[in-house]
Image 1 (cartoon, rainbow, N blue to C red):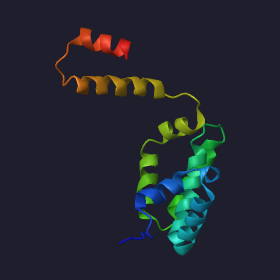
Image 2 (cartoon, one colour):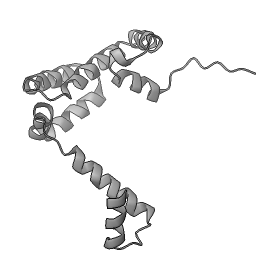
Image 3 (cartoon, one colour):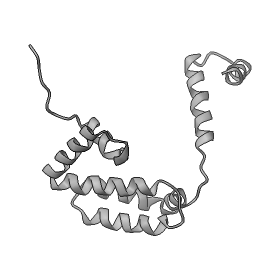
Length: 138
């Protein structure tokens, strides 16, 4: 028996919404268009997510664009976005710096993640010397 699945999972739809439109295949783009036009909230959500994704490339003009994006997001009837914008307002200076400045601590976070992964692999039984050697060799 062959089962044909015509539903898109929430995870797959989220992935398509968050993917740059030029990176989607023609089939994915068509499916995304069909799904977003079927629901007015999806049109607003896809539009807002696309414009927010564009803000993630640091540029000086992004501070004003971020404020405009927050105003637009609050004007929609999407409660989850309202909660997200409240979180952005909670630490507005840090968010403003993230979207305007080219500096970040991504390398440091990567090293921290790698160190924690190695420590978990050793089940916390190794001392600093062995941990140091595993980090330097890995």
